[in-house]
Every structure is written in structure tokens, then in C-alpha cells.
Image (cartoon, rainbow, N blue to C red; front, side):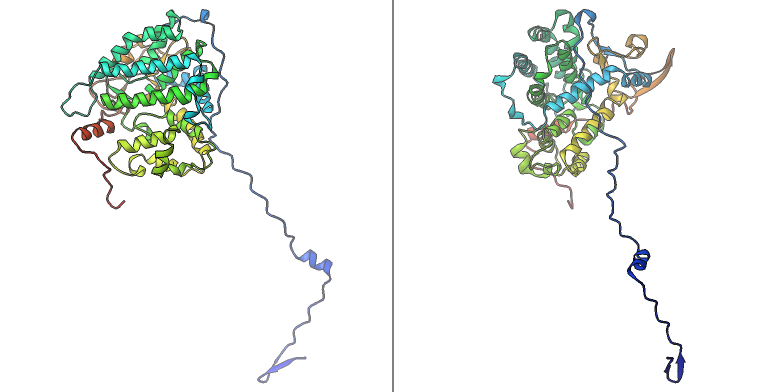
Length: 434
């Protein structure tokens, strides 16, 4: 019936039609469970470890002194498509995998093969050469000490006998020893960078190509020989004030080194409690730094800086510490090695090629171009591009600064050493408002 409000008649509402269950099911939308989105594929996956090829037959090789062959962008492109690139990746990544989930102390020197003892002795002999060549008094200068050249000359004069003990064939000693000589820094520039560090790995790779360092020795190489080399380099850097090669200090990881971070991340891959963020915990660095290369490098980096806080001194290390796990860090280090070491012309233009680590067909030769000095005689300076028969070539000049070799800068290690000599440098200098 119609209702009335204050004398106004309102129409009655129609009675809704009754619906049975089948009609309700057709009207109510079906509830479907949500499906998990497929995991997003990484557009830039970490490079995998190529298979390490078998050592070549010595009879097929003509040993010679290694020289630079990457003198242009075209040469670099040829190298990146060559089997030599895969050989280097295979060796370096195999060493990294050999260190996976292992402490440095897991290698017992009493149980390793004789070649490891001999390599350990070579490092001890190199360390002994430091005492034979004390640094010259520079009046407080923090740039490279010229006594470093005497140190390299001493190594060059003694190393042939070292390689004979290692079992290197006499005809191959000149080629193999050149990589060792170039793994401690540049004689002319008195600097050190990731390219020199790579030379030490190539020296070990040459021993592998000569069947002197089989894959069974890789754990001992990664966890005993390589850490000893890094410790030796720290001593050389602080003694002779080696300048960082380039003006950016290995992308904010360390002023000199890169590969300890790759091997160190592999060591920590599945650690039960040390996380990437643990590098900010000084207690963890103190207690575990001797067992893990990554933590040792962070600890040494913090000691050499006068400012407290990785976000100020090593911002990239600080950013990496936010990674979810060590697998992400290790994958990132692999990518960085391929892109920032092997993939950078300013680094690889100093790389040396011989018969054991051969250049690709069609790559340039030093003797074909004027103005390109041998690596040992290379002075500091920027790069210029000149037109030559056959294309655009890369050489250096001595009267300008550029991005190739970086601006000549003193090392923070030298600054810390000079501060200690003057009774300064105890403790950190804090950034205001930090």
C-alpha cells in the first residue's frame, strides 16, 4: 500500500523477485586464486665459468717475450671475441669456485703438493728483495719512491733461477717471468692497479698451461698463494708508496685490488651468519678477517683511510653491503670483472700477450706504430688517437692528462705512513654530522 509522510503519498517499492541458487551462482563472479607472477629474468645474468681447455703441447709453441697487442678499440673487440678471453675467464672463475665456502685456514701447507711450496718460496724471495732495496728518503713526499725500480731490477735478475726450480722449460722462462715482473707495478710510473694484479693471475695461468699447476691445486692457489701475494703487495705499496693506477681507485672497492673481493665473496657464499651487511661490524672484521679475503680487504681499507665510514671512503662497498646474500655479491663481482677489467680499454691496453696466452689474429703489434712504447717504459699521461695506415690507433702522450691512465695522485697508504712517521694518524677523522 502507498505510504504517506506529512500528507505526501509515496509509491510502494516493488517486491524483489526471488532467486534460486543456480541464478545466484550465475550472477556472482567466480573467485579465482591469484597466480604467482613468474620470476623476472635478469637481463644481465652473471657470466658462467667456461670449461678450462687442456694445456697445449709445448712442441706447437714458439715462446717469446710477451708484448702489448691491444692498441686500438678494434684490437680490444678482437680480444673480447677470442678464445683467450674465455681462457682467462675459465681460469679466474675456476679459482673463485675452488675457494667457495672455504676458510683460508682450511688449506694445510703440510698436505699441499710441492709446486705450492715452491710458489710460496718465490713469494718469500720477493719479500726478501724489499729488505735489499730500502726506500729512498723523499723528504716527506707521498708519491712513488724511486727505490721501487731497484726492487724490480732485483727481482728481474733473480727470477730466472726461481722459474728453473718451478720446472719451467728454459725456452719459456723469459715469457713466463715477464708476467711475474709486471705483477708488482709499473717500473716507470711507480703505480699499481687491477691490471698488475691480473698479471699475477696470468703468471699462474702460464704455469697451468705448462702442466705445472693442475686444477687439483686450485684451492691452495686461491686460499694460500693468492692471499700471500695480496699481503706481499700491501707491504710493497706501503714501502714504496705505489700510486693507484688511474684516478678512481678500482671503482670504489679498493685503491689497488679487485680479485680478492671476487674470491672472498665466493668464500662466504653460504656462511651461516656473516652477511654482506656484516662488513660494517668491526668485531666481525676483527675476528673473521684473517679467514675471509673479502673481510680482510674491507679491514685493510678502513685502516688506510683517515675518515671513518665506508659510505665516505668506499661508497661502492657500502652499496654492495645492502645485497640480500653473498650469491648476489659474487655474481656482481663476476660481472664487474668482465665489464670493468677485461672490458675496459684503459686497463687492457697494458695487457701482455705471448704464446701461452695468445693474441687474436689481426691484432696490432707495438713495433708497427710510432709513439707506442713497450709497457715497461710507458710514462704517465693521457691517450690520443692518431690516424695510421690501417685505422685509428691508441698511443700516449707526455704533455697532457686524460682518462686513460688517470691523474697522478699519491696513495692513501703513503699518507698514512707519513702521518705515522710524524706521530700523527692515530684514530679516524670523523666527517661532521655523521
